[in-house]
Image 1 (tube, rainbow, N blue to C red):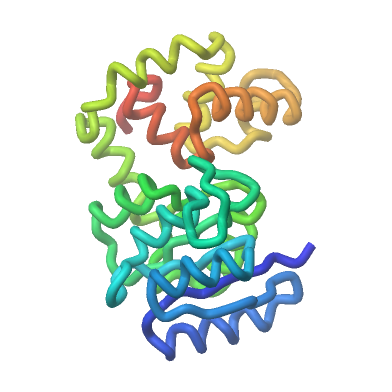
Image 2 (cartoon, rainbow, N blue to C red):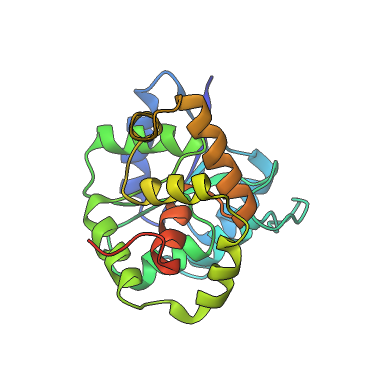
Amino acid sequence: MTIRVLICDDQPLVRAGLQALLGSQPDLELVGEAADGAAAMDSAARLRPDVVLMDVRMPGTDGIQATNAITSGTSAGMTPSPGSGPDAPRVLVLTTYDLDEYVFDALAAGASGFLLKDARPEDLVAGIRSVAAGDALLAPSVTRRLIGLFAHGRARGRLLQREAGLGLLTGREREVLGLVAKGLSNTEIGAALYVSENTVKTHVAHVLGKLGLRDRVHAVIFAYESGVAGPF
């Protein structure tokens, strides 16, 4: 299946490099380019890409604002639908800036991934495929710091809501959530719990559905924020 990709970056050289990279992959199709957040929102509504590669710092409407509009389905021409939905492309944030505030804001806006522009081309291509498939990813340099901040008390303001959400999960679903937070794949979780990979996929889907979470990245944040998983 061909993955339709929209590039949003204010630097022409970056867009040209990404265009060349996408063109070298038979399963990736560049459907459009945008130089700022407002243009990205409009292009996402018109072109209906599967994945948007989104820069953060741009003139006018920045990447965070555009991500929120695109993932919530409130871009012009889209039917508003909170969270992910049939009209909401996946957003993979691609930025030069490894700053906590950008990571938190991007995830809060509904991004499915966060990579730095110094990532290897093959990692970016793999990231696009992963996000298009419904998974999520964070740059390795970001993951441990992000989890550590949550584990040590950042964003504890929503703790009561998180605890209430945990009450919706069965014991096995909480167990699966804890293993997801440790970075285990579905295959590894199945081996640890002596169940099939399909059973694990079902548990993960139930966890995301019950807690209203978009993907595995947000499940990891939830697990550390609510105390299901302890600090490293």
